[in-house]
Image (cartoon, rainbow, N blue to C red):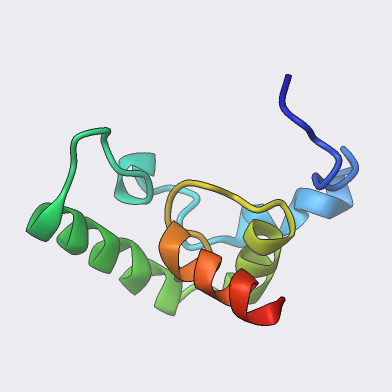
Length: 92
């Protein structure tokens, strides 16, 4: 069973920022890669996702959420999982 201790409490206030996200009406596949996706195709998809994040009014809340819960997949807050991992490692 997955540990959910890092997740925010299931209160509307904890997740309300998501209603303001630039991604709310986008295809989730823009932010999450298919299993076998690699190379140029993956980089292009991530670039498209990050372009949406660049104009998002809640990008900081999104990134904070992804870091807090150690989100292992997708583009969140303008960073992919590898980039978020580097941030977490650098922060100690």
